[in-house]
Image 1 (cartoon, helix red, strand yellow):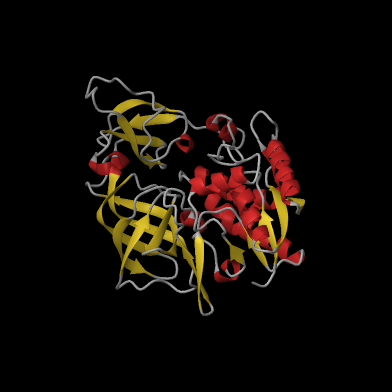
Image 2 (cartoon, rainbow, N blue to C red):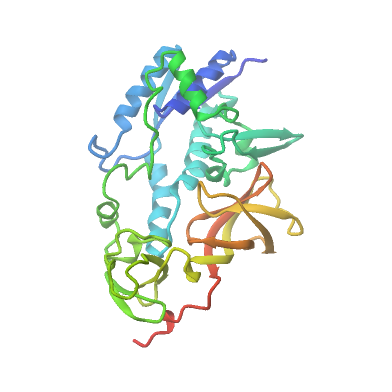
Length: 374
C-alpha cells in the first residue's frame, strides 16, 4: 500500500483515537487535528473541550504523531448555530450534527487539511465508502447499533472522495479492545451525547439566552384547554416529559404527547396515548435535498428510510420528486415524524441522501385545533 498523508480529526474520544492508530499501523503519515467549534460560555462546568484536547494530545503523543489545534468557532456560529436558532424560531427541531458534518468536519476541516498537504482526511465515524469507478458510495457501518451514515447524508462526492472511515468494519466493542490493547487511556471514556455546544447544561436555560420565550396555551385537537406551555421552541413532536399536564381526570392511564405546534396561534397541540393517530404519519414532504451520487434516486424503485437516528428502517416509496421537494410514502405509519429533522433514504446498505422534513401527513383527519375560535 502506498503511504499517504492523512489528517485525522481527533476529538479526544476512543473512536477518533483508534482511527488514527489504525492508519498509523497501515504505514500512513498521520497528523491529528483537534477542532474547536464553540467559544461562548466555554467553561469546564458545561463544556468538555479542554479535557478533550488534553486527551487528544495524550493519544497523539502515545502514537508518535503530530497534532494541531484549529479554531472553527466563527464558521460554526455562522453556518451551523445560526441555522440551529432559525429552525427553533420557526417551530422546527433541527439536528445540528448533520449540518456540522457537511459544513465544518467535511468542509472547513477538509479545506484546512488539504492546505496541510493531506491527500485524505479521516474521522471516527461509523460508516464506510465504496468506489464504483469515479463514483463514491456511502455505506452503513458493520456495527448497526453505531452506524452514523444518517448524520453524513449531506456529503457530496468531492467530500467523500477524500474521506476515510477506518472504523466502518469494526464493532464498538472491538474499537475499545484495540484502544485498551495499545494502552490508550481513552479506551473506557464515555461517548459524548447530546448537542456539542450545549453540553450538560439545561437546554431551556441555554436557548433562553438567544430566543425569548413566548408562553401560550396547550390544547387538545378539539380545542380544549389543558395547560400552558413555556414556549413552543422547548417542545418537539412526540415529547412526553415536561408538559406539566399529567394526572388529569380525562384518561389518567394514558400519558400526553406533543402532536403538533400551531405557530399561528402559539398553541401546543397534545394528544393522549403513544399510538394516537395524530402521532402517526404515512407521508412526509422533505426539502433542502442532497443526493450523494449527485443525481436523485429513481422514483420507480423501492427504498427504506429513517426519519430519526437509531430508528429501524421503514419501507417506503418516492411519491413525488423534483429538485426542491421529495414526497415519501411509507408502507406503515411512522411515529412522531418531526419537522426540522432529516429523512434519509437507503437502498440496501447504501445511503442515498435525503432532506429536511417540512411537513408530515398524519394518518388521522386534519387537526381541528388550528381552526378553533379565538
